Amino acid sequence: MTARIVPLAADAPPDLLAAARDLLGEYRDYARVAAGPGFGMAKMEREIAELPESQLMPGGGLLIAWVEDQPAGCVAIRPLPEALPERATELKRLWVRDAVRGQGIAEALVQGVIDHARALGHDAVYLDTEPLLMPAAVRLYRRLGFVDCPLYKPSDEGVAAFRLALAGPDAAA
Image (cartoon, rainbow, N blue to C red; front, side):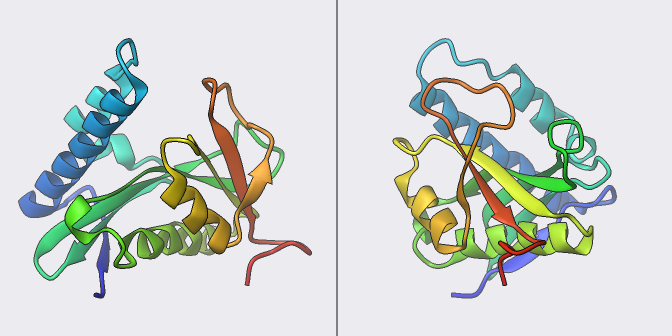
């Protein structure tokens, strides 16, 4: 199954904007259940309410995967200039709907982030995740060349960080 990856734009048509809201809302709902009571969702709520502007910072964005005429998943892209000594992109909020999992949608979205980072001339892509809650995602990241790295921002217990080199001797092909 081939996914069509579409970036969210400031002038996004209503169907793309609705898909972004729905997919980020599903991600929020999953995170709320996985993290348990007390997990703060104010930032996510603002991101959803303020679409598309909340995703359109310089160097950032939101990619939506479509399978046929249905939204299948999304991933957010963030610049990381303040956190690291290298030019880097952060992969955030990777989400694929249950009905299309295992069909390469997540890989297409991650590749979209990698391509975006390369186009910006960035040295690396970083991400953090909870390996115990998202083992399939961790397997995908490792298969694509991401390696463990120190946490690059304050994180909760159980969070692990990963880095994919795009430049230098460790760069992914």
